[in-house]
Length: 500
Image (cartoon, rainbow, N blue to C red):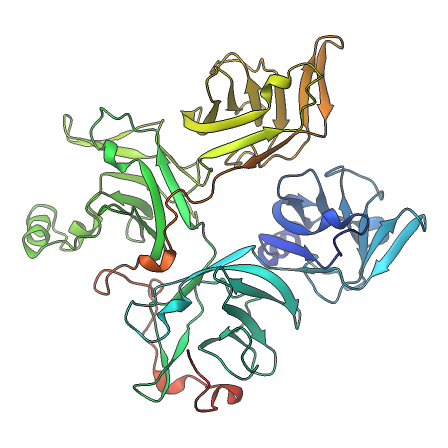
């Protein structure tokens, strides 16, 4: 039934997390984040980040199975959860998972294993500097599960975001304080995790002696850093290149600023585009707004100014290599597509490790630096060599090539990936390395590719906020809320427990 399949797909989360298998136990590597990659048998299929392992539905036995071999027609699996309620996806905490144990030669029930809808990180942005409890800004990482919902800890280790079942709300609280204390809360509504931009956060304000809605503060699931690369240094608007830090929400999407500049990447709901404006942190003057009104008949068009743009196409953030960017060229007074310009979440450097030194093509081991873009993706080059790791779109593969950039699929090693893979560490197969004795590429499960750099700026998120007059955290077409209608949870009413 096509309609039923569509409805199920719509209600399935785009990502889920397996949690609870103790480290050291057999098959503990099933723990981690899984991304929806498609559907089979009318149910979503999820793949574990950086591996071939998938979670899929097996109709003959009415089971959700975790399978290391990827998507296939088989009941062989490393773990499964039986269900009889015709659930549309596996992210239900009440499901009991059974995991294969060699000593028992059977799948053994492990009640600690839980599948939930929960991203790895949630970021709080928008609480203004100088306001009470502005230290809530920053990134929170998944830590544990409580009441069937995820709990997140701030990167500093002093705050958490957790679910309060009695009041059906999410709270931001200081770790170690009484469970009835909180800094801020948001009604949970139907959301399974706190990283939804639609949630309205209400903060304790000592000046007013009550909780007050802060429409600028939002929780978002988005990368904390994106990088714009590929614009030639000698070209006009080359200053768009560089790393940008998540700084706030504008028109319902994340906005990024480049440290030390006025550069801004933001979303425009008016044109459904991502705009990259080198002077984006300056508001349009009255003169410029009148200019646009006289010549374009649109008083708001000045706010659409930019040096480059990309059609958003439903993307949640701009850090996706599939987006194509049009850059302003003064010589022809229009925007032109620059296929080399990409905005990505790829790290600045990566490490290839695991190829035995006694085996052929061991030269691939080592550190690689982000060197540019090729065929719509980033590529990396090994220090002091011609060896590169590049994307081959025809087969959706990352290739390790000792001959540099080529327009061929000839390579020393390859690994399959999804079409939206951002860097060579995000693959969905083992690496295959060419062996001349065999005359073909042969699998080597020991090879791993992983980032060796984090955010290159090393700047705290709460160092960046977009000015009040520029930032619009409210979702498009949302009516202002009446604070008198906000219900204060009973456990939050205890005076004197509300902040640091």
